[in-house]
Amino acid sequence: MTNSHQSTIDGVVADDDSLESYNWTFEKSDTQYLTHGLHNYPARMIPKIPDTLLGHYKQTGVIEEGDLVYDPFSGSGTTAVEGRLHGLNAEGNDINPFAVMLSEAKAIPLERGGLSEARDALVDGLSEDLREVREAYDESGEVEWLEMPDVRDGWFPEPQLHELTALRDRIDSVEDEFGEAYARFFRIVLSHTTRKVSYQRNGEYKRYRLAEEDRADHNPDVEAIFTKKLKQNMEKMRDYSNRVDHDLDTTIHYSDSRTAVEDVGENQADIVITSPPYGDHQTTVAYGQFSQDPALLTGKVTYDEMKDVDKTGLGGRYDVLEPLSELEEYSPTLKATLDTLREKDGRSDDAMDFFRDYYAVMEQVGEITKSGQPVAWVVANRTMSRVNIPTHLITRELCEHLGYEFNVNLPREIPNKTLPWENAPENVEGTKGDLMANENIVILRAP
Ligand SMILES: C[S@@+](CC[C@H](N)C(=O)[O-])C[C@H]1O[C@@H](n2cnc3c(N)ncnc32)[C@H](O)[C@@H]1O
Image: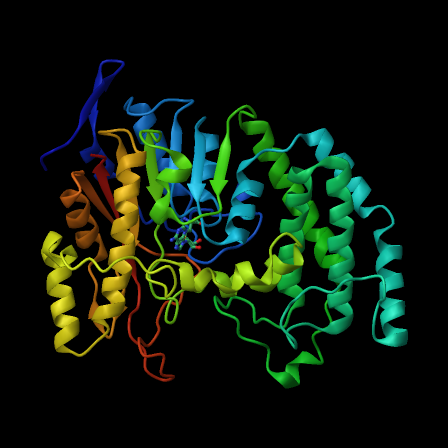
């Protein structure tokens, strides 16, 4: 292997090649420790990846405490949480407003005392409140003092939807008294509760409903689900809060990473660790669909904001960038892949849209990151029209065109992401193809 950057710390010479000695699959590793377990999210990055990378680069003197880790696709904030655990400030972007809220809720520590007081204020009198709501609903089919959220009809048992709405209002009152950070923490618990209460089938990454005949049996206890999750999340937050430096900063921008320099600035980041979306919301992961109703119940996100998330994601239909015809000249692997798709009359335009958007982010990240510092892209190799897309090679080649210097590629299997394991590319029931089974961590040094 050539091109390894070498650095010396305490007289020990280390280089990025030693990263290859780890087993990056991290099979059976806990993905729910500390605040990582506050709420699920599709296609979460396994926390061990940023943990191991940050540990390695600290040990080799490439980064140090007080530095900034940046993630252009923050998602649920895995990089930001690990960043703070390693003594780093964190910054990120996401176009899903729920992801922004979740990242901040997980990465920004809350004071133990304040948390207990805010919790007491929230749960004091809760049972009576919910009982009143239930009685009013049972009597007249509505609860006149509640302004109902804009969720889709037919996705919730109605009495429970009213109770969830009453909880939302209680959290708003907590915000007035204790501030946004505490309210945000409770909203994440409410979002979890909302998902459990809805007719959404468990474990589905898209919005599939319980069969009609099963809905009558679905009679969840809102208060019990909420208070159980609240207790669990408080324990996680207390542990996290004890372990981290409260003076560090976490900033997650609710904006498109294709223009992230506007938010973050040039030459700011000391390291980047990110897992980009897969660029195909039809057959893979619909981040917006996943969080739409729970996000609406938080009261902080609007229907208009949520409905566009999947369309504005990389390769989406909105805010389309200028065509970039030379793109395939920058990456021989991209060209070969697009040619194969064209021959098969496959979806070369979709693939092109995705890589054009992805390239825009690589460009921005190159400017945001200090020259020579590591940028790790955790990418899955997916298929489109049954053609394998070697995203790791395309990532490397496009970055090299932008002046990044390639370091190392670390392959791994995906043991436990919430993903469609096997899925027909055409979405035809009964036909199954391997959609994603492994990933690569592509590490380059910023231009
Ligand atoms: C694979 S997920 C990231 C998961 C994250 N690493 C975690 O551990 O939770 C990709 C994220 O990119 C976001 N995204 C898609 N297109 C984006 C864009 N143009 N700008 C910013 N974020 C975007 C999606 O909303 C999604 O949250």
